[in-house]
Image (spheres, rainbow, N blue to C red):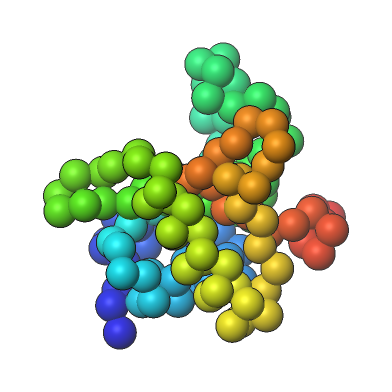
Length: 128
């Protein structure tokens, strides 16, 4: 079984256990290496991203540990080629299905398409 690097594991701290399980299984199944770039965010960090135009909401699932952003690596380089993220989405969705955990991919969104973003759905994982 392949394991995520220490930095990615650190970035999964505070993320909902179900989403952590999906990420870990997907990493083991994926032909591509990926890293976790963000998991749980502070409100301050979310405000910075909003101000920079990198986010459009203060209701991000990152604020409650229900979202992660992943980046694909080719060799030692992080790559942003869309086909890599489409392929990663297939693996993430497969892992989620195997674990029977619902998952949303930002690449499926109609507006603000976000290929690196995965989240647990609001309906099944409401914030209380």
